[in-house]
Length: 407
Image (cartoon, rainbow, N blue to C red; front, side):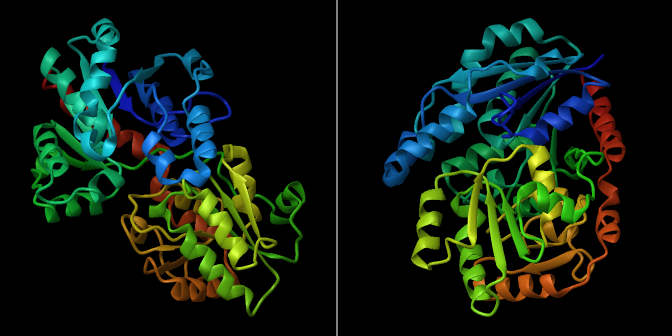
């Protein structure tokens, strides 16, 4: 059996933490066919720079870090052919040293890696830094192939000529395979003068729980969540960070409220911008219409997707966001930015609408249009049938079996 050593800075650490749950779903399915070792990379010290930058909310940021990177053991360890280690390592400030961060995590993991590496191993890294750096070091040490999976934000942040770009280019050209959730990320690499050989790239989607993210009765879900049936509901789920543009959504929602006071906005997630976003709703005097839910478990997310009239993701940049896919599987239309892989799954008028990022007026118009449509929920779900898990698994089998020949 092929051993897959999967490196990722995001992975659930306990039953109350959904960070990286989409990666868990993927490796869980893959463990039916391969031996999976997950090494979750997380910093042993809190994000001091962010705490200083967002000093008004430093305590909330610290508590979020403490919760996300819990020491609690995970029930995921009990699965067959599936082991996970939560690796604590020290790092320098990411603004200057993110490209060498993988060296620190590799140093901390050396003994564990030596125990699990076999001649039949493949290293698979999510994100260029720090996991890609660490994967390259393991590959060189043990002469085994390695893969880097582009996730969106890692490519979007690269500026041509910077030290991060130079390090990323060297890593990507050294990798045996480079995967991405959308072909748009390969195009962005090319735009940034990182010319990857066609033979080494492969588009592979994440694996989604299509049997769990399903269409449910809207009225029933609203009763569960205590949402009035006559209200029109807009929903956002994701990190409360600058790239997600939640402030633009709040501004658009404020515009909509001037003509329709029968609207509610639910915001799920946490992040450094939460304090600023709460203050923005207070400034606009719409706090009675906007509800911050904090991070939600998947069962709670499913109920909100189904109770919602429109899901909205106004991000500045993305790969292929899980929340958009999950909403569509629940039969809920989506209004999202025309960025990354989103246009590949949003067919305007069929399952949602696209908007240009940073334009609150355009966003308000499209949300209003979406709320006025009579959507066919079954048709919305069928619009992404190509993302069914068995089709994705076949791609992974091809990927790993091709690399097996290199061992």
